[in-house]
Every structure is written in structure tokens, then in C-alpha cells.
Image (cartoon, rainbow, N blue to C red; front, side, top):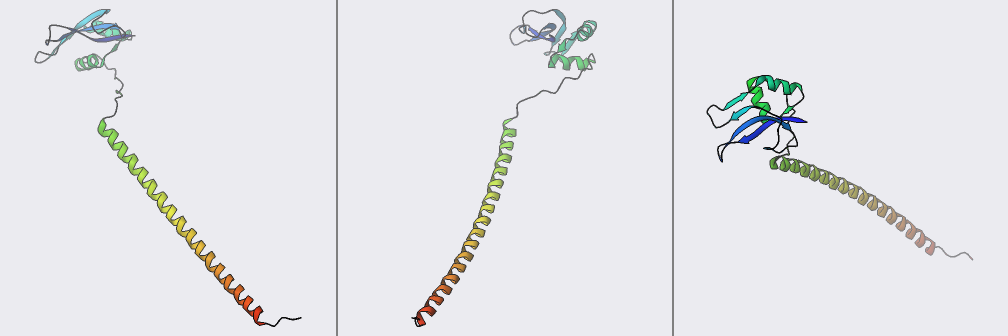
Length: 156
């Protein structure tokens, strides 16, 4: 796939760029197909000159501009193509915020589970207490019956 991109020229710490059409796999300053113009960001205002007919030709051929070249062309009104939004990795603040939300949700879930466990334990304790009381009543009834039987004379 062909790309319209910048190729750096100029001395050290004095960058100037040529706008070129090159294969996307080619090195930044490697092989290219055609020079379309030049860009000098160091002038005030920055200088950007291109052969508009050649830019239109390469856009029609399917060459994709890099983000910087697209911005420069868009400022000149040479392209109406909208670049897709860039997918960037989330910032550390976004990661920390997402982690805080996840931790809060986990804490709320743990709190809810603890409350449910406490309610279940209370219900179980109540059942055990009722069963113990019932067993005590049965035991008292059995002891009373036993003592009644002891008081009766044995029939021979």
C-alpha cells in the first residue's frame, strides 16, 4: 500500500521535510515513488508547498496520507477524507480509575455476600435455637412421664 508521508532532510537540529509517496514498508528516508512537495515547520508561519494535481492523482490511486500529511493537506483544503480516530492505549489515570471502580464493585459484592452470610447464619442460629427449645420441651415431657411411671406401683 502506498502512503503519502514526510521524509526528513536538512541539517542536525534544523529539520525540513519532503512530502513523498512511498510504500508503507519502506524506511522513513528510504526508497520513494515521487516527491510531491516540501514542508518546513521552522519558519513562521510554517511553509507547506505541494503539487496539488499530483496529490489529487495519488489520492485517486488509493495512496493513504499519514496523520501529519493528512493534517497539512486538510489545512490547505486538499483532502476531504476523514482519518479514523486513533486507538491509543489508556493513560495511567484511566487505568487507576477503572481499577478503583472495579475494586469498589468487588468490595460492594463482598459486603453484600457478608451480609447475606450473616443473615443466613442468624436464620440458622434461630432454627437451631428453636430445635434446641423443642428438644428441651420433649426432654422435659419425657422426664415427667418417666417420673410419673416411677411413682405408679408396678402391676404384677
